[in-house]
Image (cartoon, rainbow, N blue to C red; front, side):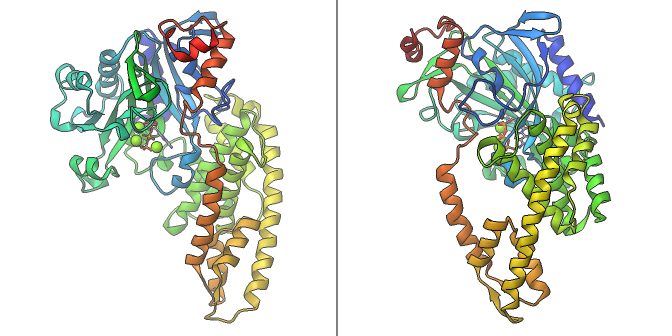
Length: 486
Ligand code: ATP
Ligand code: MG
Ligand code: MG
Ligand code: MG
């Protein structure tokens, strides 16, 4: 059944409201009081204190409310997925994650039964039950029972994975940071053989599929991880779920990827209009990257980040530059990203008013940044020109030179290859790759990963304890962290 993105978003929130959840607007993508994170990367991250025992008091238009059940559509940023954008059909750098959360209230059974109801009931999404597949943690017999007995899912449509896939956070209960953690259960949708000839068994062998799409992750934080990987059951376990809105939209709209969904098409259309290059053939990667990054840049700047060379500002700068480079490949020679920001605000400003409210200043910032980067690109073209004029057709430009262009002028290899090719000159791409890897290795050593939401659990705990006078750890009072605070 076709459903617009807006309808899916609204249905999800209404469904969980009907199950007693307080509906909250998205939090900013910029974490508040959480120095361990560069960006909010999941629906649960802004709610982390409540999983750790802080009383869930929320400011709503009707005044302060306490609620142990909450539902949100959260804007998330995953910088780790930047390289995936445009290449896989399911990764965005900024995406909306629908979620329902229980702070020591309901638990696994309700979470599983409600997920099933929302997905399959005709009043809600009405997905075909036979196309739904599920993974659970290998030791989670409870989840197995609920799925097979209470839901009635045939066991052959279920698979038990180890902790590397189905335990969260971290890839093994014994590793990973201390604090709340637990098994998870992921829900997949079979888009059918027209999307790939692979089977469910192939998927869980290879863990790659275009046909079976991961749409929803139900996490069961039921343990408190202690030093040495000891998992102590929490007296009050929590629920944390995350559903990718764009992924569900692509399933319900029957399209190959989320770029063809209703909320993305207008941005792609604008790229086509501005560049005069149609959205098909090899250049479509450029359209995808540009439109996704335009959205990402708009969301991040409208929440108050600014371009810079460190932290968040550097991420948003990288996104903008990557988009501009692809624009250059499409023949664009004038700033264009600020114009796409207007389309983003138009399409999504109803749900995220900050996109409209801050549009003018966001556009100004983008335009300035684009102008500077275009200048740098032009300098790169001149430099390349000089390099190439010293070579003859049939010669090869060295990998180090190509990398220097990339590194200094942000000049992409594709562009170097294209310009060199026009003169019959080859480029040592292996040498480029080698130089790039060396540089990446250096950067990796410096970079902060945003994947790990409990990266500095002690600090997070201490901050919460400070906020609340050190007395909020109902059920957690025996943890070492609290002991230290007290
Ligand atoms: P994947 O394996 O596809 O990278 P994930 O396991 O990293 O996804 P989770 O951390 O489980 O994702 O996040 C919960 C849900 O959010 C996923 O089931 C998916 O629907 C959605 N999601 C995750 N990453 C992205 C992304 N980069 N773009 C769009 N949706 C995403
Ligand atoms: Mg991922
Ligand atoms: Mg996954
Ligand atoms: Mg997942």
